[in-house]
Length: 64
Image (cartoon, rainbow, N blue to C red; front, side, top):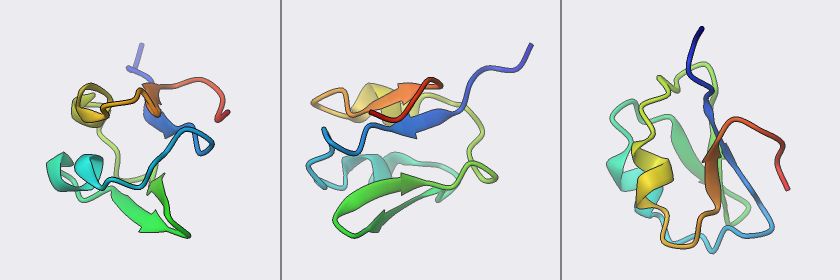
């Protein structure tokens, strides 16, 4: 079974950009002051999840 891809919880995102700088696939962009993950580029590595200082990114699940 494939590992779930990362999702951004937009209400929590502070637009710090930390996730963008660590993504090895350049799958994260800042759009309207919120991180946006392009699922087709995401390889489910989890680096962005571990990097986010406030837990605004998780592996899979609903965007909240």
